Image (cartoon, rainbow, N blue to C red; front, side, top):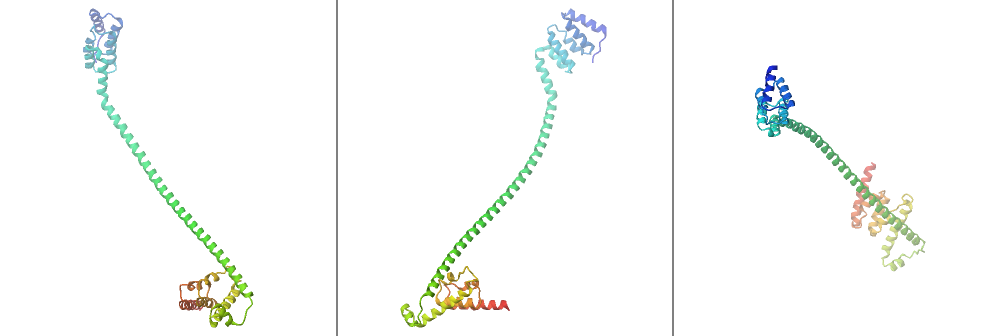
Length: 285
């Protein structure tokens, strides 16, 4: 910083006047700049009468805010470039700082973005797991609904079958009732001739039918939903004999049903009946 005394300031003012600078405001600002310690080389550059008062004021202002003297000295030679030169100076001075600031901002943004992304990723994974869980629950419920629907259909079909069997039972009952109400004859030979059977075959059929009727009369009150008629309907006489014999000897309906199959011969049904009776006897022991 240059130091000037009063005599030097007054002498410089007179020097400027002799060079053609007569504007009092300009002279005042030059004196003020000297009291502030303006550089001597820059002060000599401001003596040029070609500089307008506005350009001189701007250069003095730039000196006040710290623009280097060598730059301002160059500007005094080309005052029209003052704006361009000042912008270039600030750009060169603060560009590294701007880059640093931008880098810091970018790094901060990147860190924050990464944190937000990680949090969003966790939330996405949580939502995905929740979606998979809900999907499995929906599939399980759909399966349960399908199972319930299938069970309901089976129950409806079972009810329809039971209804048909009950209707068949009632029909068979009516037929047996009508059969019992018909006048009977002791002449088995005559009846056998009419039916085409041998007398001993007809007698055997009547015995089987009589045993079956007696069994129904004994057990009908125990099982109102009688299914024996439907079970016996497709069987032959010798197969029916094995079914009735098994029931009379204590087998339950579900056990008799295991061998009351029209595809089995009477002998096979007899063997299965004997096995079931032995198993029942073993359980009682």
